[in-house]
Image 1 (tube, rainbow, N blue to C red):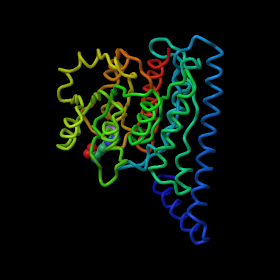
Image 2: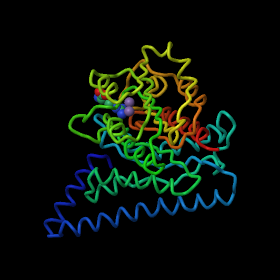
Image 3: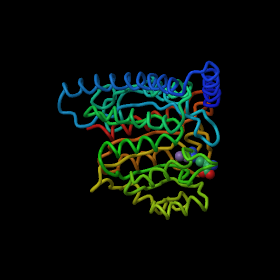
Image 4: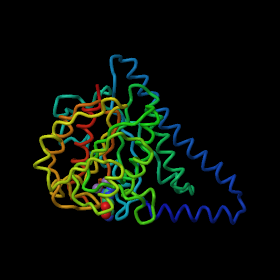
Length: 340
Ligand SMILES: NC(=[NH2+])NCCC[C@H](N)C(=O)O
Ligand SMILES: [Mn+2]
Ligand SMILES: [Mn+2]
């Protein structure tokens, strides 16, 4: 079921309920029960994994997958709602193995664990609106962070999810983080096409909220006048592809997160050149190579407290699932980065 179908479903539900004269309070109580049930499954899985890791001892941080299959805040295609299961499938696909490039074992829960997906479509189907839905996403992230040493590595979803995720990370840690944001787009419109939760506006919400001290955007090659103005307004460090050969040295040797709560890494798969990752909604030529991205991530110095991989659209992937493997490898290498 796509985002549009879910929205229709929700509208139908509300209609039916009001026809049956169910009060708004009764509807809200029902929605709350569904939300509580959703959070309970995530909480119990996180608790179990946290207990296991604490019993093993000596683990400071373990990357924990949390899927957020949300696509309806995309301004173009909604396929990213279907990405999380495809990424998991590719992570464990028999064509590769469980070692990361620098030799960590993904099979080892001290490196990577999984608490499943936030049931976005099921919650929307009950008529829950975005404001509340975004809080459910934030709550889910905090639930993972409640369990030391779990650190959230979120599978999108369109890029709108980064706002509730970063908000949760910053609120939970009690201060701003530095954000490394890899993307063809700055996603910093004040309000794109009337939607404050748009995937093209998430970083405006993040900056307004004061959740980031520094925001570094890398891979930009589709940026409007407003994107540049908003960047200036919020003091964003915008690195454009047209000067990448000049900036490479610096970007491949970043040191972030000192004096704040750590580093958040947000990877929009469309930061990559479409030759490497065709399965995205917004195909934008002239992007980073996969190795460019890995060099930036592997050489990054800093305490990565959480991250996301967003905008993979399985509905636009090649038949052999090439972009799923690309998204999976980003997740694998980010897990290596986060875990310690
Ligand atoms: N998260 C994303 N992929 N955002 C793409 C935003 C595209 C939008 N049309 C723009 O002008 O920037
Ligand atoms: Mn983006
Ligand atoms: Mn993008």
